[in-house]
Image (cartoon, rainbow, N blue to C red; front, side, top):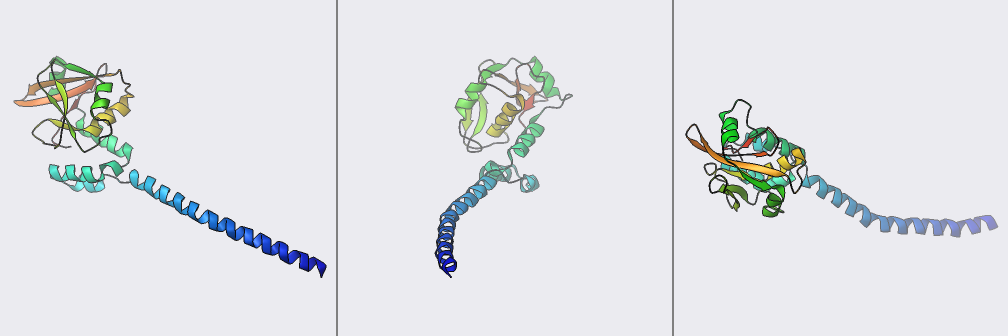
Length: 195
């Protein structure tokens, strides 16, 4: 009987401690769940809905609303694939023969630090004197680029602050072209009417 009387308070204390631990654990668990949900939503969309849009302005609006939540690898692949100039494209020869303006990667970083789809990159001026600027709207006729294209190129080539990006403005088949390449690399990236 003494053993049972000793065991009851021990059992009661153990049960009370477990309940307190459970109460303390519950808010932590909810915070962890919230953090996991936030992480998932910050990098969880695909470009499936985006690819169904045919209007450029609708594509831009979709990217401005959802672009920061798209899987980074998928977004990078999209920009590289859609702006890489084909080997046989006359733009590649035009770029090779054009005068170029050189910018360090640090210049790009400083210009669009913290931005994704809020602004767009545009190069004003003429060769050897091109100026890197940001504009508020994407205009498919104005030779401007989405900032994530440059971030995808930076990731692909592991650019450092001192890496050089060469930019050229020239004409091909009666149209203005702005193209760029990482100095020392053979791939050339071009403006397209797609964002």
